[in-house]
Image (cartoon, rainbow, N blue to C red; front, side):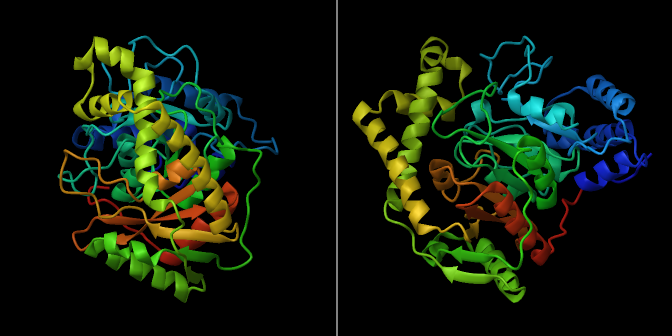
Length: 433
């Protein structure tokens, strides 16, 4: 029996060599869930018997003589509770969700199973992956928000209750929880993963993507989710760009951690250049909100009219807002999204990676908010891939993250993020972990 949770690559290697049983890995995760989840509330449902059964089946059927090793062989993962998992209900923290179990896996979950992952259960989401605060607590300080809406996924990874978890993002719902909880998150390029079997908010903004303890673990996730994309290794330090005019928005803690991180990256050889904000940037947040509101109203407006008591205050306000958006303003937002994407294609060359704080502040000291998404929503709006990784701790002991935004392939972005991870050498853990 192992005593400490390994990285994904370590776990897969040990399982392949017969040094580790998938069932032992599952049992360790279940023990950590029993130890931590009462205080953290990261899980909606833990399928203990199902996870044990999956692990035993993997052990019985995997042929170690095979030259092909699935990238997530025996790896226990969590699935955000807006994504269908066969045999488990998808509730989305919403009373209107059916209590019946999903009849089939969402395609992204099917890919994880094909890659050898063991599904531990469903992680907490804010209601319908929007803004109403969740029951989950921040693993670094329970008086601070864990972020949203992938709250449970980020907290579960931070406390090593699983080796990774699936999240989603319409505004900042992978990036912000990853940053607040001190883990890594990948928001893929828009449309790169299927959204079938995922509760929707806006068909123009919804993304699904992984959270994990390290960027290297995210690279293993991406091999599972997009096996057709081949890993990339950098020939040297990356070329990074930052937007100095955004510094006025950073609070003191984020400013200190970010400047120290950028200095360290520069010392290790990264080239840093300053990039001006493109035109139209000031309109992006308004247009993003408009697309999100109309999407919520289109999907849930009829139900809200019949059963307003099913909806939290924030999602109800978003639906009402969407119902009032004139068609011409919605059309203008769609056109603005296309123009912004084209502008970024010209402004950010593929060899250059934009780097910025993942959030304006560390996790706010409140359970009534999921935090400010202003540094995240533009990249959900644009559809460019982003990777978030921890950069350091605030003076209050809370993690602050960097996000890398790339006009490039996922494997290239992950390789650059992995280089930054090595250079930054962040090794913090939540106090109870």
